[in-house]
Image (cartoon, rainbow, N blue to C red; front, side, top):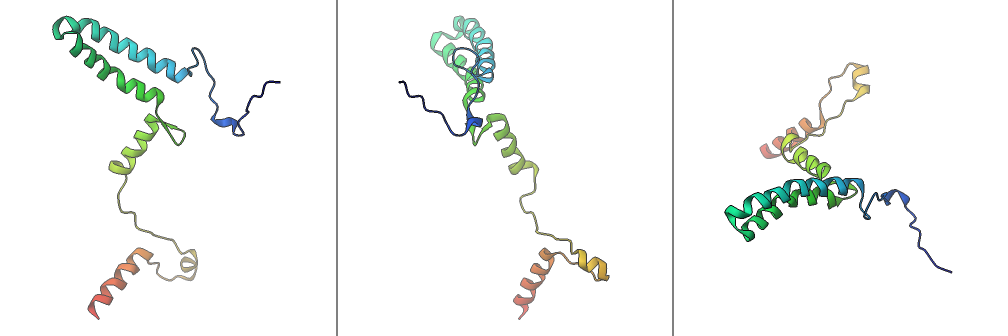
Length: 127
């Protein structure tokens, strides 16, 4: 009897389309070939074989990264989007603020915790 291991988590299994590649990989590899091969054939007369091959590799490499790279189950474009958000789009310092609904009901003034923390630090420096 042949023994075939079955993984417990079936959500990580991806369907293969052709040549044991997923649809995403086939699309990215095809795009890499459509960009890299013409660049090689058109530039090897002017640059020489070695330089044209390096140019082709440089042009095809991003497509290979988009096809193969995956971190924590996220493809490369989602990882890059998250990096751009955290580094450039969202503020670095996010103060902790709460809304005290009980103070609103009683009519008292609401002060965020971040401001009271700054006030305490300034008050300690004076003493």
